[in-house]
Structures are given as structure tokens and as C-alpha cells.
Image (cartoon, rainbow over all chains, first blue to last red):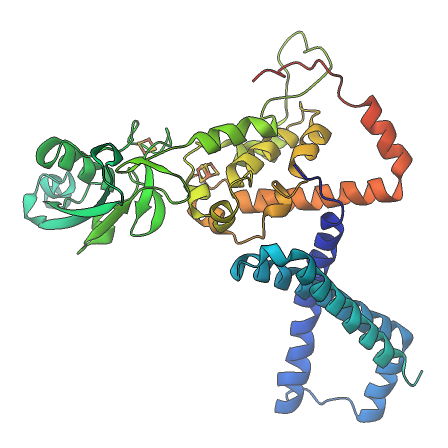
Length: 117
Length: 278
Ligand code: SF4
Ligand code: FES
């Protein structure tokens, strides 16, 4: 039996990503996708929103959300390719692409969130 | 009041007027040179209180004595009557024919196991997996003089996971079991959790060696079909997710505090443990 070294940590990221995304994304979608457009809640004006987004803690939370959600995706997608498409023999390539993608996405998120700081 | 009593004849199923139903049963007799399973249709009475197993027994007793299948208790306890009913793993003694009317009801052997004959599967793989998780109480301390008492809360911790009847419906439902024959599978992992969560047991780290592996919990991708299939509400999928969290926490601890983990491992289970022989 192969004792797993990396898997527990990847799973922790996966599971944290699932929790964070499940908590934050619906709230964001509800606000920006439904309540603001329908005018049920008066949206904050642009400058206000900018100020909120410029606040370091907001950026940190958004960064955390992006990173964890990306690792959640990477883990799920990796197993979808392994088992759903029966590509387990390509496991190295797939792992590199999935987690590499998550790392690249995290770097992009870091860039976008620090740009203009 | 008398006329509000239920119609006993109808409720006990002695009323044959309910009609008939077709059972489409998978047959396979390799000893007769059959290379592929085939299906055979049987017309049987449709009775309110008949389960699929009663239908099979009717076939065996009155129509075709060559049909082979396993059963024993007829009350959802022995775990031997599991089959696919209309493609879903079910205890056939608990699956009522009327729920499948007008039919035909397809009855097939459990998926993910080799078939020996007709509806009888070879369960050796499952039987070899169970003892691997050390499903017994591991405790170096000498047993207490009297009973080893537990509070109701301590019992409640593991009771759900102790309800398993080894029916293997979860193995039949799990796509990972079908893809990886070495995967320990839902019931075995839930059984390990049953002992891990028992206040009398000290074997968590022992079992972690077997379970925090590709063939153990990390093989599971949380499809959740095992929990849907389980007739005893064991919730093996939940047990595995809980186990993943504790195993990941343990790995994190080992990573952050390597020394303390090493200390625990050396002070850990002595070679001769009570109950080491199953
Ligand atoms: S966990 Fe449930 S489905 Fe699986 S063997 Fe035990 S009782 Fe059957
Ligand atoms: S015959 Fe025992 S569980 Fe169905």
C-alpha cells in the first residue's frame, strides 16, 4: 500500500476551497447577480466599492477565495480526468496540469489584486 | 367500528387478484459451459406483502428449481440477499414487488463482484479487505476487572458505524470499487471508523497506516453512492470524509511537529497486542 504524502494536503486545500467557495460565492452572486441588478438593494456607488476593494483585508479574503477555489477545482478536475475519462495512466501530466493551473491562476489573482496597490 | 378494520385477506397478500408481475432474472451457469450471462423471464403472482426475495423463492419452489441466489433471514439482518433490482443495489428481502409494478422487475447479481452462478457472487475480495483495517479493539492496557463502561455519548460516537451488516450493497454501488480492485471500499473504512471512534480503542495510528493510502481513504472521491445504497444508514461516505479530515490533520501535525509525531510512533502500539489475531 502506497502511503500518501501529498494527498492529505491537497485534499485539505480541496476541502477548504469547497467550504470557502460554498460560503462566499453564493453571497457574492446573490448580491452582484440578483439583488443589485434588480434594485432590491441599492448598490454602493463605484467609489465606495473601489474603497472596499482597496482595503487590504478585502484583497486578502478575495485572494484566499481565488487560491482555494482554484485548488478545489484542480483536485476535482484531476479525479474527473483520472476516473471519468479513465486517464489514470497519465497521472503525472494531469497532476502537473491541474495543480500547475491552480498555481498559475493564483499568481494571476495575486497580480490582479496587488496591481494598483 | 368493525367495518373500518383493514381487509385482512388483501393485506396478507392471499388475494391473488392483484395480478402478476414479470421478474427478469439474470442467469449464468458457467459449469454448463455458458460463457455469458443471459436473462430469463418468470411470471409470478404480484402480492402486496411480497418482496423481490419472495418472488425468487416462488420461482425456486414452483417454477424453476435451478435458480441460485443467497438469502437467510428475510428481515434485513443477515446481509446475504443483496442484488441489483432494476439496476440498484438492494436487499431483496426489503424491496417490495409492488414498488416495481407493473414490471418487469430486473434482478441481477451485485455489480463489482465476479459471479459464481446466477445471482450468487464471489465475495472473497470483500472478506480479505475487512481484516486489513484491524476491526477489533486495540488497547495495550490490561482489560478492566469488570465491564469496560461507556457513557451513552461515547456509544453514540460510533454506534451508527457499528450497524453495518456486511451486505456489500455499498461495494456494488461504488464506482471506485469497480475501477480499482484494491480500494478498501466503503464498509471497511466505515468499520475502521467504528473502532477509531470507540473510547475503549487506542488503534487510531495503527489503522492510519492502512487507511491513509491510495487504496484507503484517498482513493475515495466522494461520489456518495455508498451512503445512498446502504440499507442500515451507516453513511460510509460520511465516515470516509470524517476520516479524511482526521488523517489530513494528523499529516499536518506530522509535518509541523515531526518530533512529537515520531515520539508518538515509538511509544505507540507494542508488537504483541491483544486481539492481533482476528
Ligand atoms: S456499510 Fe451499509 S451498504 Fe455497506 S456493507 Fe455495511 S450495511 Fe451494507
Ligand atoms: S435475507 Fe437477510 S438481509 Fe435479506
